[in-house]
Length: 223
Ligand code: SF4
Ligand code: SF4
Image (tube, rainbow, N blue to C red; front, top):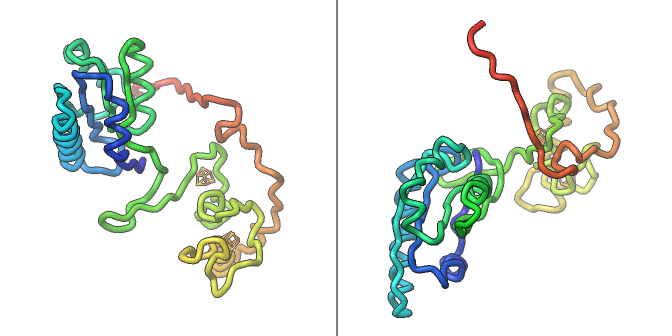
């Protein structure tokens, strides 16, 4: 899932300094928050903006809305009615949503209300950990399903670096050395020979090194 974090209120207030009609726009399906939490967050941001602006004596009208997704045109079209009633949007979607709204409405000021942090897994309530950097050429078929690009702070493709102590990474003291984990797993499975493959320097073009990545797929309906 996409992990996002609300921006500091001061930053949001700076964005909307010159606006007096804004829309706080939640996105309820793709980020790590539940739809209920997204709606609560939208309300919280609305209340905080109003409260802080009241203190300055500068009135602001704040509308609120939550779309299932801000990264699909079919949902952005739901803004048609409301878009002419505001002069700026604070989007609480990941960066994809903010970008697509900016593409759709070139004259509209669109600001990010959250920071898009990473692709992560929910380990327990309130705790998410990054597991993948969407590098575009997945290698974890060779590494027992564990991603060294994401989980090794040195992003080592041929590890380990030799610095781990008692299984703990030398760079991050709370992090198990993923390369030791990979080796242990492959050894237990009798597949250590997989590590005989020496990876050359990764071709980062698949990770966005050539700019915007695209995917076109033919939609097949039926058999
Ligand atoms: S190798 Fe690339 S695609 Fe695979 S898990 Fe790691 S970052 Fe993600
Ligand atoms: S100790 Fe392990 S996880 Fe840490 S940088 Fe070295 S190889 Fe990577």
